[in-house]
Length: 396
Image 1 (cartoon, rainbow, N blue to C red):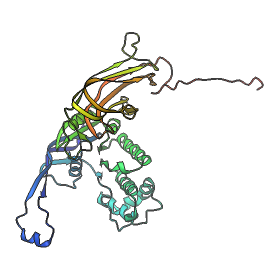
Image 2 (tube, rainbow, N blue to C red):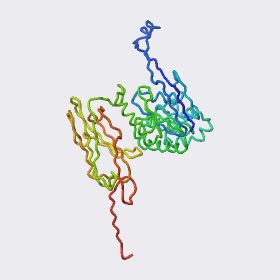
Image 3 (cartoon, rainbow, N blue to C red):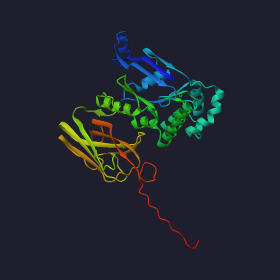
């Protein structure tokens, strides 16, 4: 299938002033002698997005995700390289982007729609649907400077998805919406997927990438380090995060202080296969090695389904087993007395972090999994241990 987006040797440089003057006089004295620092936010990016696919962009803060999206949208011009797109683009990149605070919601719908390429007649035709999706019927004639952040997001997304785009670009700004609206947006994205639209989503949530994306790309300090299947992209993202995400990363990374040296999943093996039955016990042994001594450590375990949805996550500190001090080598054992799952393969993630998750020492993203085979007619993922009683009234 032909690419809807082609990014060819894209580089983007920003020039940052290294001097900060406190007065007009200082600026005048140093006029013409101002020094600048160069920041390469993107460096020789090569990326092709096939028409009708959904691609997730992963990376630590400052990796270049939003800059890449703005270049694709045409908001920023590349320093070097070229971007080719096919079809109408709608972008939701920043909170309130394209809105004028002194105009009403109604006026901003027409302004934003025209910026995205709609005629006034087209906007009038879609106006009620836009306002209804944003759930702003009672506020549409108020100035948007009086809107909450959630109202901004709802209106911005409602306009973006109702301009009938061929390509939809969505930054992680959606995270500020409430849970119900996020679900509504996700449903609309899934509708777009069924219609064959091309979507790029920037997010910090790996579970979302696994759930909705066909492929994912990982950026690290302005360079594209991986582009491929979502599961492998998440693994690459974790590895580069652990390799040193820089001071702007959302979590501090402390490499080489602690390592997961081995993981074993122990459960009854039935017949000739290494599968479990619903209700079987599961014992997970995580071997570790610590260089020197670290304080306030937590071991994390998370279970997913094959669609990337998180089923369960817990850590030793949240389970009431804090590790105030750790050194040398040893083993942490997680025990599930009765696994309440039905048919499926269940990937498992393990990590060593500080208590509360502020620092990451090691992370093992879905390298292991266990299998469950359900011999009963019950369907679904969860074993509910359902019991049925039938009472018959003989008088009727």
